Image (cartoon, rainbow, N blue to C red; front, side):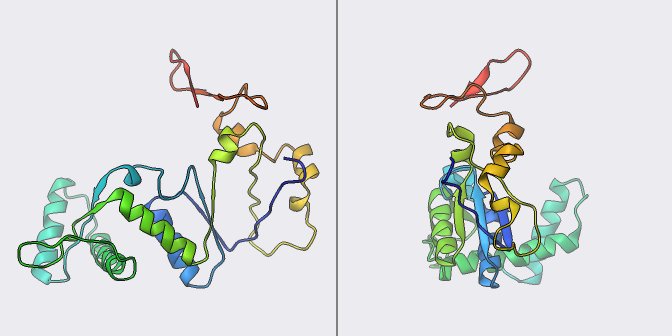
Length: 216
């Protein structure tokens, strides 16, 4: 990695690339923040949502409909839910799904009455459009697979909450290597043990005491 390290200064670091992460990155960027999104894989194709379908709690802001929706969920949850949060989730979901339809141009189907059906999403198409939206909003997207599988340690996140000076220590690649910080993500998750330059497989952590280690 020597000589190839790239540093990014950012206001917001979003870790993950699913629905919550991409919406958070999008809204932060729209508010004027510099945003870096770090996903474990190619954002828009990794994670549970991108591989299947997903239901959404989409309920029009009609008092009777909202009351029925909250009452049903309360029963399912053993009456442990907080209705204030339920109302916020309903409001946010309604707004974001409608935004996905208008600005994201998601192709929602229509029912027999011609009204759009917005209670579910096809994961691959949903996340493909979210990736497009965050990229257009200026979000810088990177991934952890480079760090987990590459034979060279690559990732280091500096936990600073202020702009970096021109030549800080966190930009000093040799210094980071000497302090054991560059590549610390892979070490912390226990991935890549036994990986050598040019190897086709990396040995990951065992899933259980008697289980063999996973490989990629």
